[in-house]
Amino acid sequence: MKKIIGRALIVIPALFMQLLWYAILLSLLDKLLYGQLGAIINAVFSILSVIFAMSIIARRDESSYKLLWVMVITAMPVLGAILYFALGNKHTGAALKKKLDKTGRFVSKPDIIEKENNDNLSDIAENDARLSQTLRFISDSTGFPVLKNKTSKLYAFGEDMFADMCLDLVKAEKYVYIEYFIIRTGKFWDTLTDILAERIKSGVDVRVMYDDLGSIATYSMRDIKALTEKGIKCIPFNPFFLIKTQLNNRDHRKIMVIDGEIAYSGGVNLSDEYINEIHPHGIWKDIGFRITGAAVKSYAYMFMEFWNAFSPDAIPEDLAEQRITESILRDITESESTPGADNGYIMPYYDSPVSDEHTSNILYSEALSMATDYVWFYTPYLILGDALYDSFIRAARRGVDIRIIMPGIPDKKMVFRLSRSYYGDLIKAGVRIYEYTPGFVHAKAVLMDDKFAGIGSVNLDYRSLFLHFECNSIFYKADIVECLKNDYLNTLKACKEIKYENINRNIPNTLLNNFLRVFAPLL
Image 1 (cartoon, rainbow, N blue to C red):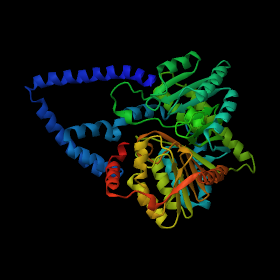
Image 2 (image 1 turned 180 degrees about the vertical axis):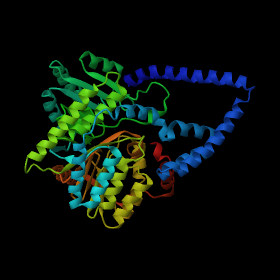
Image 3 (image 1 turned 120 degrees about the vertical axis):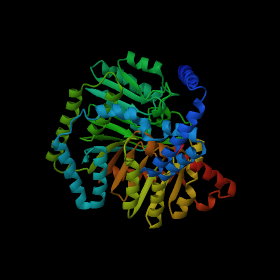
Image 4 (image 1 turned 60 degrees about the vertical axis):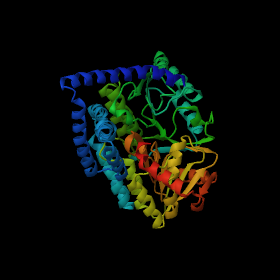
């Protein structure tokens, strides 16, 4: 609460000064236009509302998202057009995209890496041509290659991953990159920073990036100053200080890279509830993973791209290029020269709200379309767009075993209430939904037909699928797929299945569900 109050003391005066400036400017314009400014603004925005409505209908996007904005603009032409211009279209993230475009090409991708990508996709096609097509599409749209998976370890709970993180960080020799949505001081983060401070004394380069809005109640400029005093470089992503249209686009990724040799990712943030040190919502069920091999460099690239886009203290381009490309080539060479070391394939990638393709939304729809046996999901939230919603229903109706594990104890009651509004039609179609009775599920994963798994930071909701920067890894024929399946089956033992007859379908409840679903894209 102190951190929120402190931020409010900074933000509110800044917002007030902005609004005051707009008011003064409009007042001067009104005088110049002989008191007709209001009528002119109304006419301009009425015309804009029609143009926006037509462009919304014509564009390639989720129908429910388009319907919401058409309703808002139709009901309130002036305010609706302003809101859409500020929040409702991809141009709101143009400033972020411009910065990323400048740095997104600073790491070269040698021909051998592209050849490795094509060779791996061809190998996968021999066993599953349909899946290979999907992976090629994702690779082409995100720019990330399919690589050989060296080692991958699944963590069923955050506290297990925390222990290994500490062991690996103690051994760091060159650099540590950390990027998370939430950082909160406590046992988890304080233990890591103590280790990092010691490694800095040995010349290790440590850089930390966190989402400013995601950590608004947990981390502050004072905390950054404390890190800086220890020699740790730290920046907030997309700071929440002024009125900016890209405030809706958050960095929800979870990435830790150590020396380009080890990477951690998944759903776990750097806060004590994620390691069950505190229990705000019962037992906190989350999953994460640790990988080694060439794919680690994909995560290093993700971090470097963002860091150099938003930090004044950029990682030198020649150093960044050398760190990534040389080590990728080394890992590719090692995998080719080590017989019997095959552990499947991995493709890390990240989603961008300023991209034309919503990659994870496409991946999940594709998984539901390709599956012949089962598709199982972990997710803390269930707010689906129409295309993905229909994919769930179609897959279940054709006999695929579709399961979703949800929290039993919510962290956000309104979002949980909205998530449950999707239960009825899904269960009626044959989807099996379970709620984790010991507490809150924060895990994010998909598992299909014993073939592939997707594990990362992506929730089954609008924000993750359309508005946030997210990261995910697709594993194919890797041992982590079987580990995830075992973890899922073990978690089911602590869950209660929701039956159709237990769903409240009376008229008031149905009307409330319908109302909430209209505004789902904003939650």
